[in-house]
Image (tube, rainbow, N blue to C red; front, top):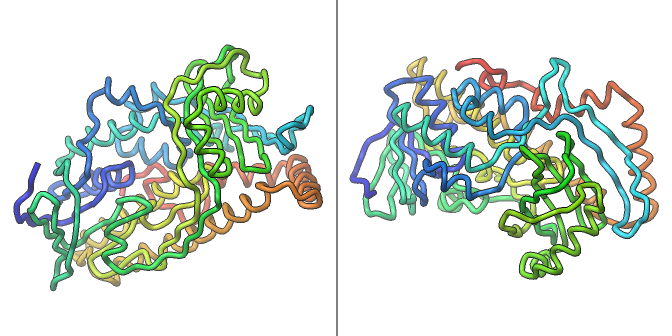
Length: 412
């Protein structure tokens, strides 16, 4: 629907999990705050339509606690699958033996699964419904095509012809963020020459809640458990081959079985398959006066560690806490000194994760014999050090660093 010139407190561009969860967090913490969310697609509130999208993501324990504190985990949980353990292998595709170098118990010290697999559409649908019920104004289908900063406000121009003005504009519009470009914020970015293939399979034998990541010279191949005898695939491959695989049924199925082997028994691909280019994108700045970047608009990383989505939730929790506390103190939420608190909070963690995923991908996506030997020895040593393994599980669960209140399961 079209919007006229309308004054809001906060305007969010992007209706994915980042935009919706931020809108919901703000509306829940500050009832009466005028929050508008603009997205190119109407909110997915039809359960039958949501069920057609079989894509899924790993939600870390900290992010699950945030979703629970926002009141949406109850609707998501019946569709989720806890990851109970994880194994990592490293071998060539044609190796007859694929030794397991590293195993993880998938529970934190508190006995909580370190992650759950959650269907993307189910999560977004639950967030959209909750945000609407909390009083968030959702403007869709529409999009922000331009914005200007004026004294005390940002004014966003919409494709529909209307405008929205607010103390703060939040860009949650993805890794190719138009708003980031309009703001003149530069990025550090490069391509890995890989594409990530995602799809869903149904299999004969149960996965028993186990996630597996197989490091291959062309990139990691991961199977992640879903409810029932189903698994989500995240398959990194050289871009030229990935494009052929998604177009050729016979080639896709034959190459899939080469990677899966026989551990799942009979396998059937039940989800649409798609390939997405993989690279690293890191915004030089996360904030400008009246503007904040969140989620993929601020950072896009390789999926090798499965942390991209969870980094977005950490952005949401930190930004929401900064904004809510500023507003309660009577401060201007769009003022640069307020927004820099968010940038300071998130920058080190973001850069650290970007560096870690970049190094991991370069280390494991090759077939250089000395490098393979060193990394396999390293994996074996980690497997024999329980304290170090617990540290990695804690990191994967999101229970590290200066945690925002929402990630600890507390209200702001």
